[in-house]
Length: 442
Image (tube, rainbow, N blue to C red; front, side, top):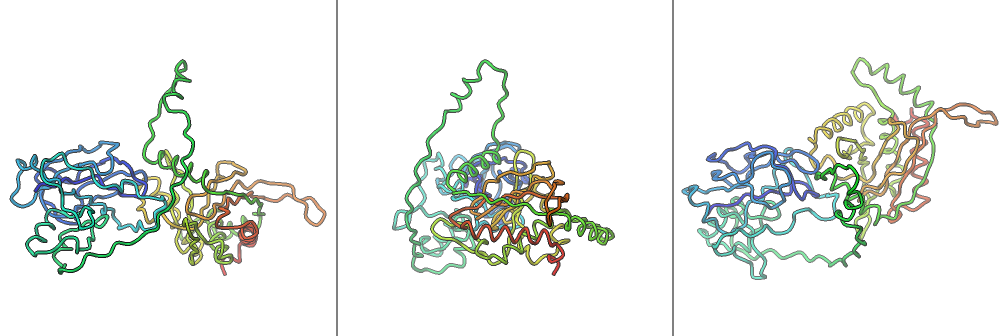
């Protein structure tokens, strides 16, 4: 029967998206893996693949439509022998979610949000056809109509088939390769007590009334700004932050950087101070491995590699692309990779695996003239380094006043993961590398 194709959750925080562009039209034949549309999520523009084969019978959401909720029907797929006349007879079988669609393929297992947006079951179709079958335990079995038909022909119990589609959905390949057997055992997850609800503030209407006699302009929240507000609000409320502050002398680094850039000019490489900061932090994470950790609710997860996230400001928000294995990369390699990630972040072309993960982040506002600030930890990270501008400062050395280029840094730390002494040790290592930059080449 005709099957609804639903708006998928293409990122862990996605609740709604913009259907940016259709790459197919009504009447086009598609097969599994074909890219059928481009979807703008709260973080990126991503390609959307078909899971099963069929013909696009009707497009329900026009391209350019914003605010399309996850699990909203956006098109109808017809099977062999069906026509547009059959669309009104669509069954209540679950529709395709196609959320395996981004290109390149992204590993979203390390989601930075506590729960995937749109993970509830799809809304039932307004059809009078019988509901989709359920397993013995009463759970609804999610499978494509084609998979159901093949299973019926083979005499397979769908409850015994493990789905490989989005959220365990059973697709054609699963039933073609399946043999009759026992249903897979359900994993038992420990129940977590619900967190106490935060006190609610004034309603939007109540706040608007305060300014009713003033000239104002309302700015609707897009997906990215809504996600930033939600996640960082939760972070500040739930993470026990504490702050460690130190300054680093940059004179040796500035001279060393100038010498290196002269040598690298022929290769088109120009190192920034931020490149040295990334490298210094990556090495410090290796030297203080207990600080290379994240909070995982009921445990602490310690990472072996140094995966360093760097905040990148874009219009309407920010990204934190992750430089994986940063401790193993040269300064020039880090510089090239960071420029590429930053450029693609500004165009919203990063895949989820490029901005998820890491144990630690850097937020540098020095280029805007900010001398020092306190950054909010990006969960589940254990810490974030806020970097200010390098400023000519009088310093006492050996009883004499000299002028040095000093850079202020503040390490925001999750006290559940890193204690004060450990955080101080970690920050000291960062400062040591910045003040002795030649050692970072060893």
